[in-house]
Length: 198
Image 1 (cartoon, rainbow, N blue to C red):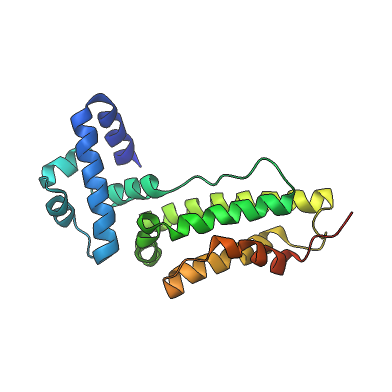
Image 2: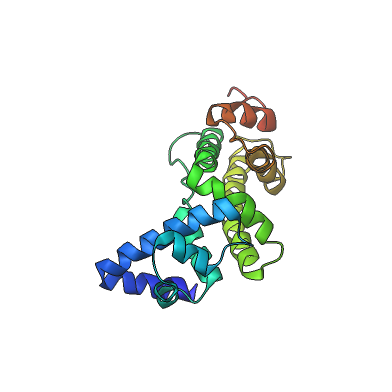
C-alpha cells in the first residue's frame, strides 16, 4: 500500500513517470494472466514492459506492492443503483458485478490471485478487504429490503448475499466462463422469490 501511494505521488508530479507506470501495470496484468502470481517476477514484468528493473523498484518496493497497484487499477467500485425497489437495485448491482467478471482484464487475473491469497498473506489481506467491502454493500441492501418489508423477514441477509453472488464467481472461476448479466434477474428471482404484489 505504501509503495502504491509513493508511485501515485510520483506519477502526479511527472508525466513520464505516469506513462512508464501505466506500461508497467499493463505488463503486470498480462504477466499475471499468462504465468500466474507465483511465477511473476519483477524481471519478467520489466522485460515485458521494456523497462529496467530499477524503473520498477523506483515506483514499487517489490512484487506485492506492484500487484496490489494492479488490483487497484483493475477493480471497479460497486455502484448501487439509486432508484428502484430493493430487488431492482440488487439486480442492478449483480449485473454490474457480472459485467466486471466478464471483462478480460479483470477476470483474467482472478484465478491466479484467488490461488495466491492462500499462500501470500499480503494478497490474502487485500482479497479479504476487497471481498468484505463488496459483500457488505449487498448485505446492507438486503437488510434494507427486510426492514421495509419488501423482502421476507426470515431471510438472512449475509447468507443470501453469498447465495446471490456465489454463482457469478463459481461460473468465472470453475468454468472460465462469465455469468451472463441477462440471467441475473432469473437468479435474483430464484433466490428471493417472485415479488409480491402490494
